[in-house]
Length: 383
Image (cartoon, rainbow, N blue to C red; front, side, top):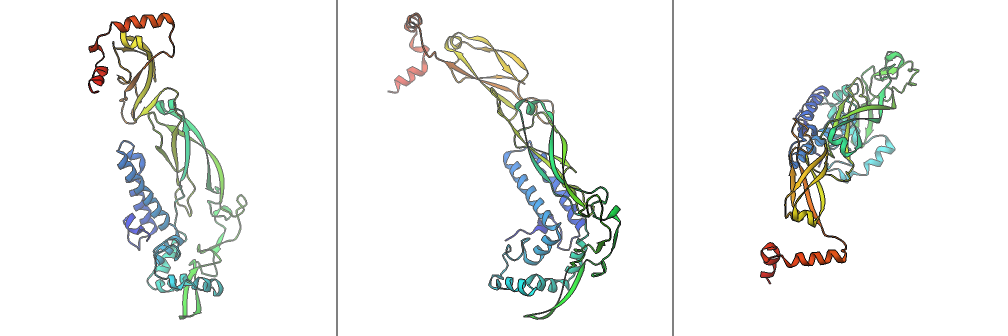
């Protein structure tokens, strides 16, 4: 069963287009993913799901045909998509095609007496917000750390600037539709298996607008809209992570009937770094050293995001030891704090030895005492 989109947006079934739009904007701001970048994964996921639910509800209720289908059948896809108990009358689908009359018309007639017809007619000319555009943008590890500016190519539908998207010359070359007298709806009386029924539907001449173009716009040939490719500059904030999105309002598809433009949503992906790994705002690095340096201790120059750093390796450092360098991580999105850098020390044993090295190691090995190898002793004690 489809969800109740009116309940999702918190509006009544008789809500106007402006009321629906206002409710949608309020909820979209409340659950926008950009506000949850510092929240837990569970909170991010819940907000994302809620945001999708709100967007889908608005998509249905702001579209005249989808809302009418939802009001009638409980599903924006009509009787085939809804759960309604009319499956046994599937044969009427063919009847509708053959005789020009079906359940759409029957229910339109029934509900028109309750004001449904007039509200749907009014929605034909109501402003509708343009759709959002989602694009992916891959950036380097360093660009994610320090921020950058990119240019993305966006293919979007735009209203003709010469006719304001109307398709009429100068946006004014209209006349009142004579078939519906400007109502956008026409009444038709037909004989059906249920008797003679009067139905109201969208005017076929003006497509529900109530107006007929008398002279087409010469710039768009009366189409009113065209698909264009635009270059949009995208500012990447320092510290952004893979999967996060940046929203640019007004950079999406153009709206209809004066509705506002949709948004451009840029989803970030990040190329892997050859040395560093990211963990939140912290950086991880694997540092291989030879076993002599690990045993005796040393100072090693290690790379960081901000240049070289001298790192002291304590005497007798074991492989797998993690050393922390404070404030050498990634700048956090909010505030000036940085994460830390964690260096994972890997003690590397030589792949081969010379005869002289073997002799020296044998002499060295003979000097070790049991207490110097506590792990080995504990292992042997357990056998």
